[in-house]
Length: 173
Length: 173
DNA sequence: GTCTATATTGCGATAGAC
DNA sequence: GTCTATCGCAATATAGAC
Image (cartoon, rainbow over all chains, first blue to last red; front, side, top):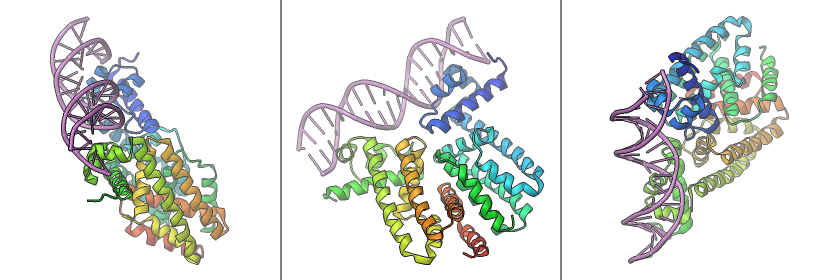
């Protein structure tokens, strides 16, 4: 198993975030993270010297994933806002997992709140540039936030996207 | 100070929820709740025999507040959907505090997830009855969820409501 | 780079005095 | 109805072997 150090660090971050998603901050203990990643607690603490370092690592990875997502949005051209909403409802992608993990952490850690705020600002800027209409951009972002929120609590999202697209069509979108 | 038992229980629930809102689940320890409510840990455990009982008490109180809010929505008549959005952005009310507390708890406790789901269903039913348009009702609810989500992470909500009302006006609302 | 102890702290909960 | 004292346990983190 994995002697590559950066590969082990990624595995530890994956384990941390997936425990955060499933059990919340109380479930993401160092013991549980190490076990899930298949290393000992000592092994974990070699790569991340403290729990704070683990949190920092997760938030930094989120920042990279968001930057990539912003590029993907821009590549969607005319469908940019639709791409945004479709991916807001998505579950199981690396970005989604990091984002939910950050949401869990945000209830206790200001760095996570800040990371979430920066993420939202980046998305708003792209939406607003594309639509040229701040009211519409903010409304669409709030709808995306709403879908993220519901998914966060395990609520079904199947009908939501269709309903939203229906309403957007009435607005000429 | 307060010899009335139900008054003390209310004060304990207030303390629990406000600690949950400010510091998350990790900050809402029995010690901290008791100190904030001005009683000893033993005193707290007389009223709520366990942490689970404290959680249950908070979720039951939420249920009552939501039932009251649904009545207030109905009383708003034509402005029902606007009333819903205005109160979604509100902070500091008892309902708001209970709702955020439930959001914190939901990351770790399924009872809280269930309570949140029931709350959303109640609101959707009222919105849908009023608008007679499920797509619109769900979209408006998602916008409300989005505002709740942002407020949850301390993000400014000042412009949001104005932008949303602007877009709703374009839809004849 | 990964492991097994172990020190230390703080949590939820119980027992029993007042 | 409220208190103090204390037990048992789990969490973060350190020390040092391999």
